[in-house]
Image (cartoon, rainbow, N blue to C red):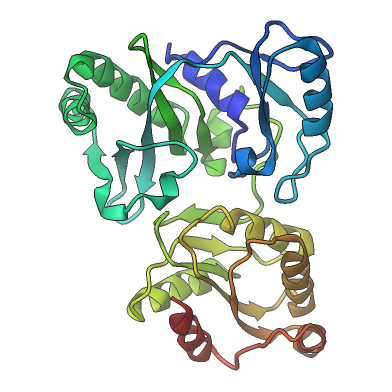
Length: 351
């Protein structure tokens, strides 16, 4: 379950983690100047025009109206967040994520955060494994890495709060980008991207958010991965991920679209994949039963039409309504591979 920024920041505030002063933008502003931010569950809002600084009432009214109707990667916001601008000295990157390979919580950090964080080389990120009692050591290493020795205690406190919150709320991702160091020396979470574990919802009767839990089993494996995968059925999805790795490529995700997937749910999966900035190709491996090949084909065609940043596709389909799917894709000049090996070979040429 992906939270919108304002929802994530409310959770951060429950642990006394500093966030900008804010209000949900209504007909009039609580204060000005303010930064208006579209609340959609995708990246790239700033470049798309969904983040704007307004200085007076006229700008506030005009930009709020504009942003409220601005579609970004298929999403139109129900909520606009307005925040007090920060006096920024530095923008840093900090996140906590579940490492599926080791079943541990991994802290990732970079000295340069903000809108171009994906351009940072993967080997330049600081990566630490967190566990109970490790916050002080991690905070010290973070202070050394950021070259902020005078913020050691503050970073130790921040890591401890984030780690406790991460576990208490059953998060799979907690990303603060940027973590802003203000000119007065305060560390502030200027943005927050949080994903909660849908399977843990029974433990949290208080959870109530704008977005519904995702219908697909979508797990990030490596945000720097160069191949995304879509399959139906957990076994086939795992086999597809393993095959990608065995062929020398780096899988970004595990995605089981389930047995009852339809055009809408598959299209939603494509939208999520476009958030991975390093993905060069998407491998689609469907053996259709309840899920129909023609539904998948329609989702592929819709994704090609609606998502400008959709990576190339390597498609293998088989099973229910394959003939209809093949005809639909052929009409759009979209090739299908006869088997997974051929799809993998095609993908490797693109990575």
